[in-house]
Image 1 (spheres, rainbow, N blue to C red):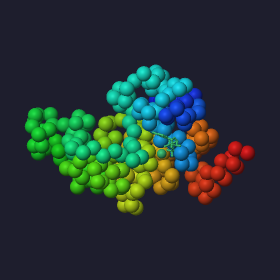
Image 2 (cartoon, protein in one colour):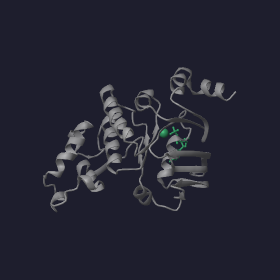
Image 3 (spheres, rainbow, N blue to C red):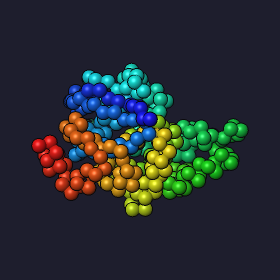
Image 4 (spheres, rainbow, N blue to C red):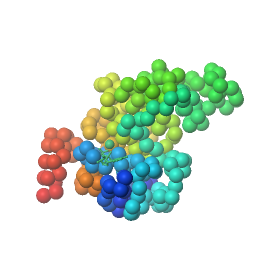
Length: 256
Ligand SMILES: Nc1ncnc2c1ncn2[C@@H]1O[C@H](COP(=O)(O)OP(=O)(O)O)[C@@H](O)[C@H]1O
Ligand SMILES: [Mg+2]
């Protein structure tokens, strides 16, 4: 049985006094996978950042409900503690914070249960699992580097995905997780997301312009945003048609 994990009702958002979202009604169910598509500047990232609670994104109307309760009064930290997470389209660099230390700090699974020296850089067995996971995502070489600092486009996307997964989220908004990835990295990311999808524990909302990851994952539902509104709800079968026709023609035809 499925149940709604997160929903927006008539969500209206402005940035710097300019309206960006103009009444979004959307529901994300437990364990399902969604694609949020739409032309550039249609409001996709804004929707995800507003749900996460980034302060520039001012809610001027409507509501965001997590398990039926409004989260509008909650901080980013409180939302993250509920299990809401957002992987940035362009992940910010944080100098002075090593990827490995950051991951150990946010994820109890990688924290040494016995060795208080852990955060002082001591090697201990709890790191084996962490390094296996780094290796699976092809980012072992980044473990000792400052977070996203000088990472290539593809490296920062894989590192960002790993960070979000390490928070053990209940819902993940992945903002173009496939942009800048070469063919092999695309496969790595696709496989990782597919293995999460198979467990059906985490709700995934994937913002993307490419069909590879979406088809690989077999998304359950597709939403198309245009000018800050959901203008179309469909499924996987729409993706190749959309790719062929482009948004303008596709939407003109379906909205006729
Ligand atoms: N922090 C911001 N400051 C100013 N304008 C913003 C900001 N965030 C988003 N916008 C504007 O909101 C619109 C929607 O942006 P965005 O949600 O990033 O679109 P998408 O992700 O669909 O490409 C764009 O016109 C963009 O310039
Ligand atoms: Mg965007």
